Length: 267
Image 1: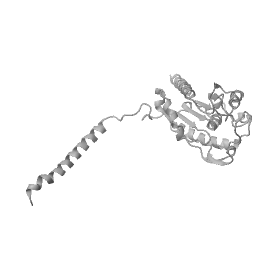
Image 2 (image 1 turned 120 degrees about the vertical axis):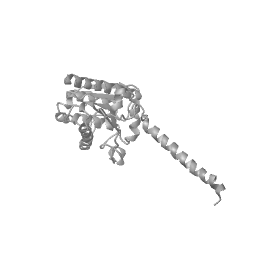
Image 3 (image 1 turned 30 degrees about the horizontal axis):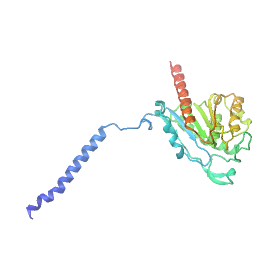
């Protein structure tokens, strides 16, 4: 062997050893450093509140996930969010076209008086209740659980909150409607009647008419429930940042009140 060539053979080996050494050092440093998290990412602590967002007809859960980025208050660092997608099914108002839909919608625009798919609504409600029950079983207080929804998702929000057997933190309806007749009032439990409702509706809505939104508070009043109704002039069938900021404040107030109740009850 020509020993004069040995330094050239050692160079790759030296580079390899140096590379491995640097890699090991970097790995050690990374493991020593605390992980850097966005202040609005899911906290490693156990969730103390839960927000379920139900989208509108033809939409999807993932398309609505950016909504959570607007909720920047510290209270939401320990909030779990869920944005499910509706199953795909034929929808009558769209000539039987198959699309994401929580239940069938017979006619568009939606008025204060319209034929409802009550059977489909009640089936969808069972699925929402299963989601809520899972979070309650995981340790989240029902009074820290909020169901929110837009349009068809708002109608399902209302139905789900009214028919849940316990008092929830609240239900927020955006551009929604009452998806069943007044006979459902007899099925609302005394605990569910204590759940507060926030109802927001655009006055320029041509899909779910403003009159359909206005029919909500009187219906809830007959059920003995509280409803805060907000009308937004010039807002069409969409959800605005102003509405979402109002929702953030509304949920925060309820979270504070529920934690105050817990503190007073434990003292």
